[in-house]
Length: 349
Ligand SMILES: C[S@@+](CC[C@H](N)C(=O)[O-])C[C@H]1O[C@@H](n2cnc3c(N)ncnc32)[C@H](O)[C@@H]1O
Image 1 (cartoon, protein in one colour):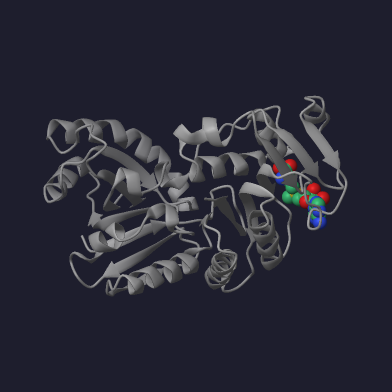
Image 2: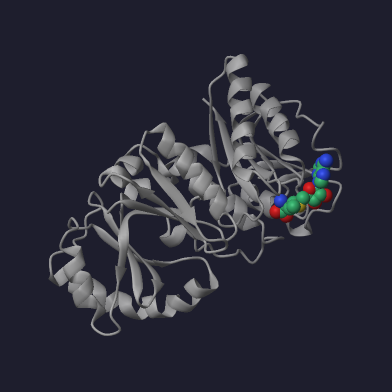
């Protein structure tokens, strides 16, 4: 069980390799990262048998930027018939697990396999439960079976509280019909990702105020309004009438990069397509200058050196807040709804 398998958005395998190799070097876990272009996954092969467990224990999944899901384990070849017996035999070396997810990669091959997984899941679950290999217990590791084909599966383990919130890291969020744009799901996913559910009542409350920079037509404003907030929406473009009719939105046609509120607000969100360094300086001013307490901003990625560029900007933010002598938690993730971008969450502590 000496590999860590990492799922990602197709096209970002190189970023995942760079990131996991960087983290492994920091934790002194010897090994190497490998991937194939557009395969939607990468693998970190550890030289020591205990390396994969040590790597995952030393990292918080939520702090990784590009991986959508991860698991430690190894590949197993499967026969065409009676795959369950072969799986049961291989899993005899694994601990008893507390939950089971069947996964595929986010690639065309993966999509073709999802039907197979749907059919296979119930009989497998029954067999594992019957053999005492699966009990319902969140404190036990989750068994993650990632099918590469009907003949090859990665038998993986991950702690339920230190891995993706959803199978394959893909949230199944329902598009709200009244929302003016599909990007509304991006902000909803950001909240699920960065704010524990039990804190939504206090951190996303109807007593709060928010600013949405680059708001038109209003997908992100819709999420703030849905939580009952009073919102200032900044954009030269029009806002959906349905949002203006709520009476909760003030629309200002001004430049989002220079405008600041007269009174501090609770939230600032920004979905303007801009150079990432400019967006990072802007959020540093908002949080550092006390204009908002929390922020969610999109950082567009450059064509090359995407991991290195994100790290550079995050370090610059950390240093700027340290120089201002303020404590700010910074998290950054490539969400499922992100394309050539990552989403950052900042919170003044
Ligand atoms: C990706 S769209 C935002 C979509 C929006 N978040 C939604 O969910 O409907 C980006 C918006 O940023 C606006 N924009 C670009 N530069 C801006 C600036 N300097 N100040 C304010 N808005 C800007 C554009 O007019 C555009 O409407």
